[in-house]
Image 1 (spheres, rainbow, N blue to C red):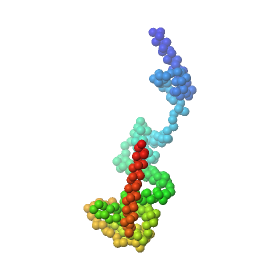
Image 2: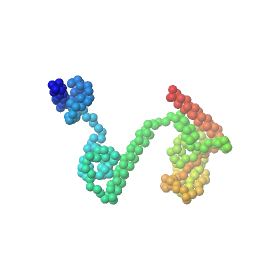
Image 3: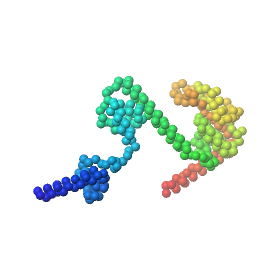
Image 4: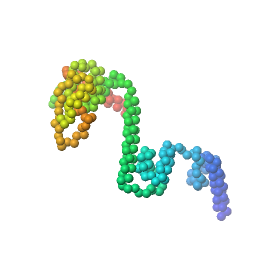
Length: 288
């Protein structure tokens, strides 16, 4: 009995010392080293109920946002309203304020309107983040060397250009695309290869239900060579097909043909084989 009493007294004395050190602002590690307590369970018992000093608490980026969310919740705001005001996700809001009382229920119309505003705010935030990512990525490219443009153009053509088939050995350089940026890069690549401008011919392919004249004007301005355009090809419109490429932004596709290009086509085919072989060798080196 005396031994138990002695152990209890020793523990209480140790706890008193631990609490005193804690209130002086020492961390758990400092108290452990000062008192030579290596057992975390015993240290937890010694410091039970004693809050950690402020300096040991790690700052969190969302602390201010969390505090504001709790303030708005106490004002009776819903998750949707808090989301509109703070621009954070409802899952985060739920974690921050779920211990607080719920506000009175609103009508379905009011709830729907608030939810729409919250979703619109979320979409705006996501779009801003998306645009910033694109700007940052564009800045990473910087300037492009002639060799980089050369390799890029070969890959671009082999992905989007026409290719000879075993059953139709037509060796002619033809590139078709609806993206003006792709067309610009392809034309820049042809200029790098010293392809004579007089060898280029352009044709517009567009659905007959679209504005063909407007599309022709668009592509003539885009390439800056109005005299080298052939007859526009109209694609038969199928009314049962739900086409997405409609509206003012739809200008069909531009076909770029290079006359007298059989030799160029063969070189492109060879360049592509060279790129594939070089990529495989580089990949093998990366694996070893």
